[in-house]
Image (tube, rainbow, N blue to C red; front, top):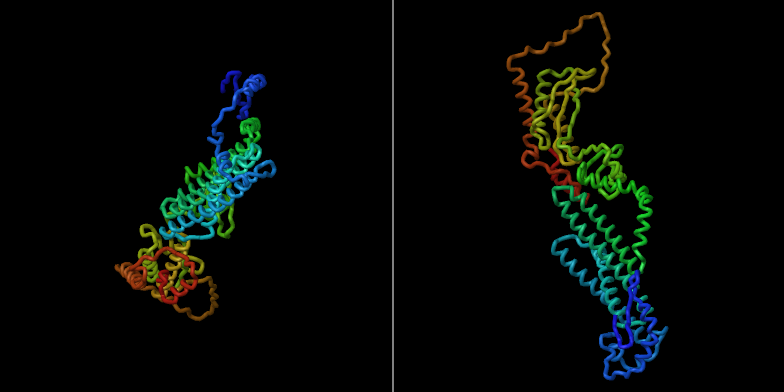
Length: 480
């Protein structure tokens, strides 16, 4: 409010945030004008002080200030074009500087650099710098109120969009770095948290940007929120499943029934966990299809996590012929036990190898053992290694494997040769048989490559020709 000799100029702020002259000021405007118009003019007053547009206009030549288009001086149009051009140049400079900085940083960290992707990531930062310059230029040029409002609104929309876009890209960059760090760490809970936090931040960025854009367009937020309050019940009913899935994701993070990379069975779905989202969990099946499981169902579902197995059981029956002598069977069983004790990926404190039953066509030896492997591929490799060594042991001891057969006996009245009897059981027969089996098994594995160096888990090389060269040169650590 400013007081003068003949009245008061008073401004009032309306509910929408705009300012207007008060009713008393408008009622006394005639008296105020009559008193002011009769006053003498003040000389030597610099009208350009504090006004950049007037200062700029006063320094321009007369021929530039002449002429106008659409009620706007031509020099302002020229200044606007020059401002847009300078903004585009700033856009290119900012992108080039940021691209060079990140390129040197990534190379110094010895990380793979994807140039096209890196250039695209820098695009919103250059646009943000250009739009900020445009907004500053529009303020300096001093356009008429209507044109000024339109241009400022357009520049603010571009700036807000660029800032939202930049924040979006920044979240991608930071989450990518966090995800690489999470993969190097032993814990897998961060593999679940990083994608979840990334999506949450992106939702927050979009919501914040939408509110700011609505405010820039003078769209009242209060009535919208009130409308949401009135329709809150309907929205809550419609979003019930979404809320359940959100709480389900929180429950999964807190309870941790599985982690990224685990082999799980959830209901009828079996596969490897790829990602935990706000709404659902994605599982890659062994048919390479992707199944989306709502997080709400995980709270009530029974999750069988094969990825957390400490041991991987192997159970089978070996069928040997009935003609196999008992001492040979004893030696064969002890030899298999020695193979289990000697192999690098077998559990040494619990296993069973015994003659278990008399089958219809064979003597059945039970093998019940466990492998300690980090993944399924290594388990298959070690299972094959074990079975091949069992076959070699059987060949070394003269054990023949049986298969389903039928024997047809033709009766005749002639004399039948008697079955040759087994030898008498001596006091040290069992000890000698066991010792023979141990010696046979040790002789079998004494020169195995894995005696000196434990084989590493299975790694599939990206280059098929490289794998073929390794096989040709004999550098195959899976062999025994």
